[in-house]
Amino acid sequence: MGDTKIEWTEKSWNPVTGCTLISPGCKNCYAKKMANRLKGRYGYPEENDGFTPGTVHEDKLNEPLSWKKSRRIFVCSMGDLFHKDVSLFAIESVFQIMRNCPQHTFMLLTKRPDNMITSVLNVEVSKNGKIPKNILIGVTAENQEQWDWRTKFLGLLSGITTFVSVEPMLEEVNAGDNIQFVDWVICGAETGPGARYMRPEWALDLKEQCKAAGVPFFMKQMSEKKAIPPYLQCREFPK
Image (cartoon, rainbow, N blue to C red; front, side, top):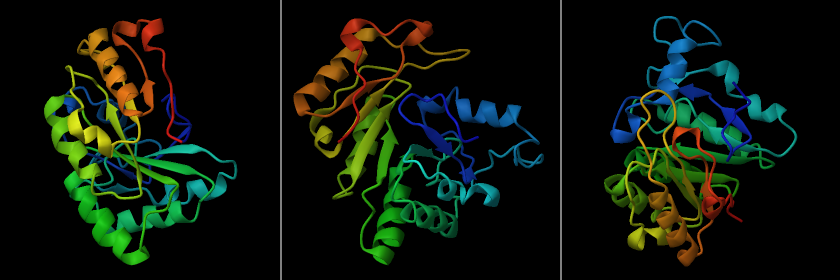
């Protein structure tokens, strides 16, 4: 479960798994499908397939401590660490490991920024004073509604590198004033059975908005397994 094919990261780390559908981007959730395929294997309990929110995998918690080489690590790719059913103890345990691994860059992605703010600011910041520089916090924004609502919470994370994953991109997105809260944008079409189509001009428009705002842009993939056209070939990372 450590290696990943996700282009913008190098490792996935899943000490906590599980989630529930919350917005249109969840319709064809890859993590839920994968958890069902892995039911009864790789530490997933047979009774809940590992996708019950707040499922903690104690055997995975210390994994980053053994990775000596610096890596970009996607935290909880098989769930949402800030789901309401994830205990504060579990969140604190994950953050403690990240604090103990300054050689790595950890990337947390959530669809629940309101819960994230409560957890990060009220628990982590109040306990330790600030979030370590090696932790990036992001939100998923698959459409205009979610961009407008979720990205505004990133403005509350002063001094933290933030990012937005516009994947799956389901419609054209106007970044608006909230782009000022964002340090990095990832964009990609939905893939797999039943994937909804992303028009290339939507991605190009977002790329141009990022360029104008000085925000690094990472184009992940197009619809229908098509090659990324030259005008969209951009894979930048935050500094």
